[in-house]
Image (cartoon, rainbow, N blue to C red; front, side, top):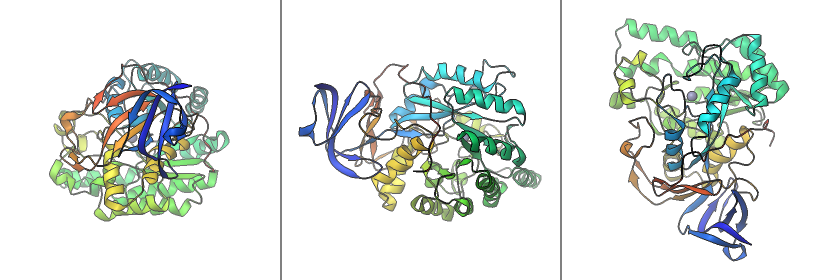
Length: 461
Ligand SMILES: [Zn+2]
């Protein structure tokens, strides 16, 4: 047998360990992993000497095609993803035609999934959606059923009042009861809305027009307050609860209090919370305005503690595609929240966790590939097991350079990481066996990306 590709000579990193070995790929799948001599012959042999060979990054939190408010498209943002070693993304589908042009206000979640699926297939990495439930009514449950039938097995809820999408705890309780029955995942944005609104109004009344006040308008306890109540509802109902973008010690502690074995409660944090503290507002103004906000140095370290202890389980970008102009031409309270990051997450987390703090490569694989894939019902992703999709990254751990916004493939025209030194870089990215990014260049045509019909995930393992 002659296979299409063998990657040989590198250090293979999986969620369990590292070893010297080679990987054979054919017809989109991993066919064998082991010593080079034991593998079949290949049409193409890729030399990975002195490189880390790992599963592609699975980023379960990106906002790609929200073209009513953002400028990202699947063509642009999946290029950024591929350049950053990201081979699977989970974007969002919305009710009521929210955020997606060409959809009317009577569009359902199912309509949005159909429209965005077509757009996603123009990209180059694989993708899925979280269905967002932003309306407190019975029809939302019918929309949930339709989404499940389309392979969307997680549902986003905004506890915060967020541009009209927030819902109350009473409805979270109802949704969680349904999720406990069908096994799908509740993905929750946890901030206490009324407290944040009051503090924001007070800051504005005091004439605080500098973005440095932003963290004080959404302090750590407003996040912990929300996390505590949602975690309590998850514990009470037995629903799977995934807390997105955990930023601080108090919120991580709140998750930990209700978390037994990760079978119902899991937490995510993001690269920006691992890289920056709140001093960044003085340096970058509105650009790093993200909700919840960047916090103190102690909070940054608490996130690494929580990742080490297994209280936080995944690292995802919350990639948002705004332009510099849209972020900076308005006062901080009108500035859109979020920043792009999918092109740099792997090299940033590699620097912060592996190089700076001694976390292992298997940790990196678990937090950025395997656990996100398993958390969201994609057993064919985030692993190098034979038979699974050949999504593979070749990473050079010893390639010091500075991040440059000018290399960005995203339609966002800035990077909050511009100029930051990192230690390693993504050299090659394969999606289902096809080389899509090579040495900083995209080398495949648009349209390689496939929609993933996800399973109901099993969180017991
Ligand atoms: Zn988000």
